[in-house]
Length: 124
Image (tube, rainbow, N blue to C red; front, side, top):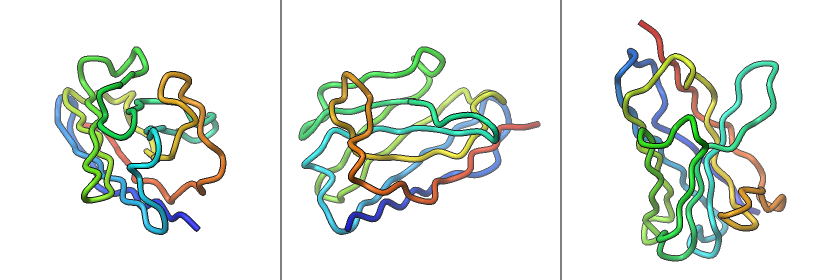
């Protein structure tokens, strides 16, 4: 069974930066396209960024984070990253990672359980 563990969140001022990490146990990340999602209370989980396997040459982002967020992967460490700069209060959410059916469609595979996520709070 795959376990995803997200980390790296925290409280940051507007304009600040954070780097999120997602580590998988029980299965190698390098076998799948991967994505980051985020969720705020009362709203559905939304897509943030996707990266292709195995080399990560294919990436896509939701419009609101383009130019500010960068997704990457280190298959040797079984880890996917999300570098976030120029953070805004509207980026505040719990961030999750998961495997995707295809990095272009951004649809989760559905057979990897969601992790606990990592809280990102952007506030002055």
